[in-house]
Amino acid sequence: MGEPRAGTPERQTATGRRSLLVVGAGLVAAVTCALTLWAAGAIDPVPLPGIPVPSAEVTWLVPALQLLNDAAAVVTVGCLLGAAVLVPGGPTISTAGYRWLRMTTWSAAVWALAALVSLPLLLADFLGTGVEVVSLRAVYSFVVDIEQGRVLLVVAALAAVVASSARTVLTPTGARVLLVIALAATVPPAFTSHSADEADHDLAVAGLALHVLGVVGWAGGLLALLLAARLTGPTRTAAVGRFSRLAAPLALLVAGSGVVTSFTRLSAPGQLVNTSYGIVLLVKTAALLAVVTIGWWHRRRTLSALGAGRPGAFFRLAAVEVLLLAATIGVGVGLSRTAPPPVPQPAERAVEGASGVLPTPPPGTVGVFERE
Image 1: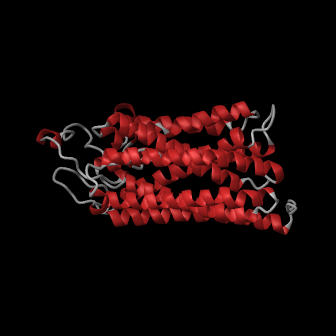
Image 2 (image 1 turned 180 degrees about the vertical axis):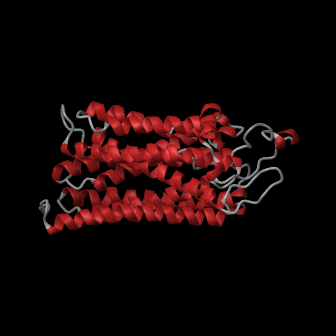
Image 3 (image 1 turned 120 degrees about the horizontal axis):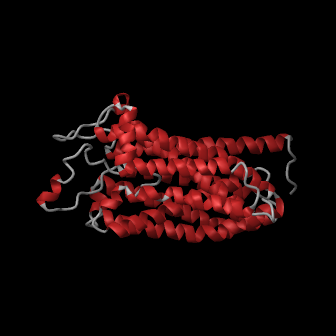
């Protein structure tokens, strides 16, 4: 079946569908995040003696910006994966890779901006105040003295490097360098998440970092394929085949790292069903299993149809997979704001962190894909 030419009603319809998919994925992620926050009680924290509660605006804006961070990271890594691996081209970048790099410029800029805007909001969340009372001096101290602030600044700087460089890169090697930088920007928040405070510190941090890398590669690569409007014919078939070979190990990486990080959070199997954290974790697991099932169906049914010049089935199934991944990411953001089940500790540990300029940060308020 021939491909619709540029400017034709068929091409315009395909572009409209891709735009609708992006909007739909964003809405699915936002709705599932909001529902998770509401169901887990994360938007209505219980005041504790000596621990202030942030304003309602901060309570909602922190996960909203975290979701925006995650979405921008997924698009950035996905487009760079497409340009560097899926359709690398020859000595110079391919046409599809060139277009992916232009998308990267915008998504990485959003990523950098979201990380910077998160600084005063996260500080307000720590202090239990409204963002209007946070001064520039306080934000400066937050960045200089507190690890969470420094990490967000590093993420913003790395994303800004990708955004500025993507407009000038014209070779597959350059795209691969940017891909490494983008992947590196997703990892530092794992070291300041509440995984870093677990007894199994190294295991928790390693599991979360691997989980992040698996998610952004899996979700981003699939989204990049759907956004490549000019990727057609044998080139598209080859790109989808390369992604298909990557998707299976990435899915295993996400699943395995998820099990590892869950092990560091839960001290008893019963916590999966009798705590808010465990129930949200089960919902997220179910969504991931659904995505894996669809991916398996892809390999068996739609890849041959795509090779025969019938892309409709592939795009329909891939769109469902993207929407499910968006829902999974939304649930993940909600999970990151849900306190894990308490672990019995000595009495002296119960008051640890009560002194100092800033109170102990709430769980999961920092970073991209702090999820488990």
